[in-house]
Length: 156
Image (tube, rainbow, N blue to C red; front, side, top):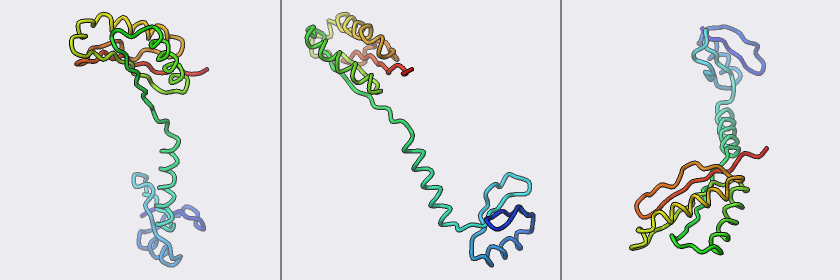
């Protein structure tokens, strides 16, 4: 026994054979909508149209989903104030646009000796961006890079 619904049919409980005959008579398909219900619910519809509408709904959901953009800003361990301020302005713009920012200090050759300088630079960067974004990950050394991650603050 199944419960059959459709455009011209109000919810009726009938045998599967009767439901299939009814669908054949209407030149449509019998599609199981809710198999866990008691009795299971089937709908008399055009199956191709049903698949098309499901794909369309999935596309809409995917289009509405927010895409996370990560922008990277690279520093050297001995970055000057002018370069620092220039990159800070870019980071502010990125955070205001809703993108995440990953700032990193790249240590080349023997400059790895200035790890403390790189950490101080990134902490200063995080402090200057405090009102625009929040720190996801504090400065951490990964290979020859010291990385800091920031995400934008929610707008009120």
